[in-house]
Length: 155
Length: 217
Image (cartoon, rainbow over all chains, first blue to last red; front, side):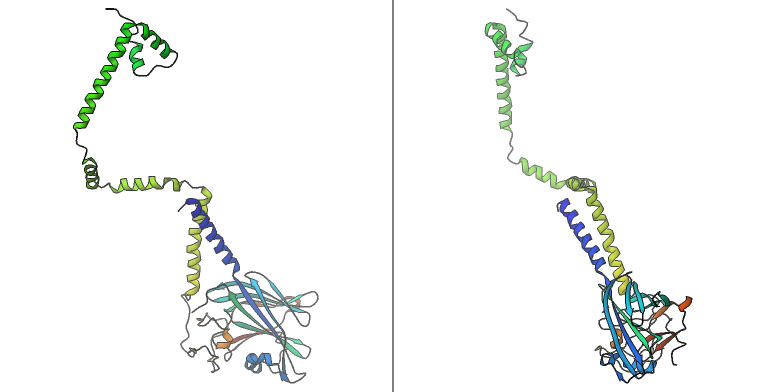
């Protein structure tokens, strides 16, 4: 093979590998549920979450108030505005052995005060639930899920 | 017998075609008027003819009909050593070795990155050496339907990782271990709130309750 063609081939393959590495990202899924006693009812979109909500929380009404899906690169900070002048900063940190590590910060107020700062990990496509701080007569329940993209799926 | 100083000097050179102009022209002009030089030149030509004739006669007497077969037989009989072969191979590829340094750099980088990339992927595919497979976990559904059977409570959320068996569907839909590992969790400053970590074994979920002082237990 012509040496120059060989060099071009190597360069192209290296470039493709680099682009593939850059294409790896994570999909974040943030669902915000308002649980309250102001009324009765259960949002139909929360059927899959219902057993957990009913067992863990004791409210008469559960309503999905916000659902966000967002692609992020590893290390990229994603800000999610929440009801009640609160927001959440989620940073997907790493993917290791089919687990996703996240940094999660909850803040509130016009001059944001940190409520919570958590560094955690859960299985790929898994979730973790945050709940608390009264919102009017109920609480906000936030479920964060993350799915790694561009990673080989486990058989 | 008349002699000429040129007879032994320039005439043999003229015969051998070693003279350049204008000496060559002068010698030829001289030879036209000098009998000894003309005779010496003729003798040289005659010697040349005789010599050529003798050589051709001897060459004609040699049988070359099997020459190349004999050469081939000799070549096949004596195979070159590995050192010679290696050198011949190197010489045949030497033009290729001389391609530019950037090309070598890219090729080296590529050869380094590919095994690294493959190694990383293999690490991802292999469970960690300290993975604990809980023996009391219920068997996972082979058809990946939702598993609604009750789960035995697992260790606290900060325990060792567990093997993740299915990835193609969200874990909460197939009832696998969705347990989170908490590396650090704190609330400080003016907005500090109480924090409780709960693990719901039935949904296999970790729930972090913040502001727990306000939360109805």
